[in-house]
Image (cartoon, rainbow, N blue to C red):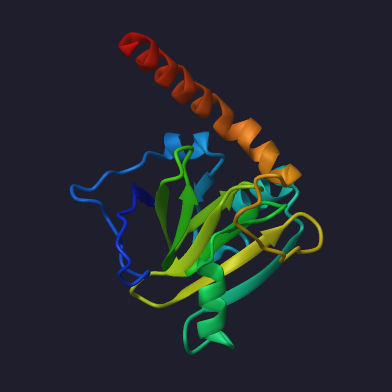
Length: 194
């Protein structure tokens, strides 16, 4: 898995959208945003003890599979457009890439997009309440296992949802410390120039 800050181009969403020069984001930075990641053996997902351990520890007891491509997904154009609309969920979004590749974009505390490139073997968890979106990359294909705690909830809440309790929890759990640092920095700068 790789991650980087996105440029502001309105070009094809399936392109990498690197800034110039590229500005990569570490796994540690993603973890600060609540993003979890594992690299697993996608060829043996049915018997992989590491996947079973993660599922047991995190309570992921429901699974299904999705193939995202123009040939494999009914109503592809509508669905890929919906996936790319900025939204949040009230539950984690857990995806295990079994084949192909694609991008999950997540907002950082300063509202900048971070693009996360997942490939075969990557399992990613986006926290409940995080603003994010998904698109394929230029390979135009991804097969993923979707995991859930309990019955799946598919409801996306398109931005803005800042008053939603789950969004508020996300801000308090993952963004508040960073936002407080920004406020202190701005206050210090203001005091120095006053």
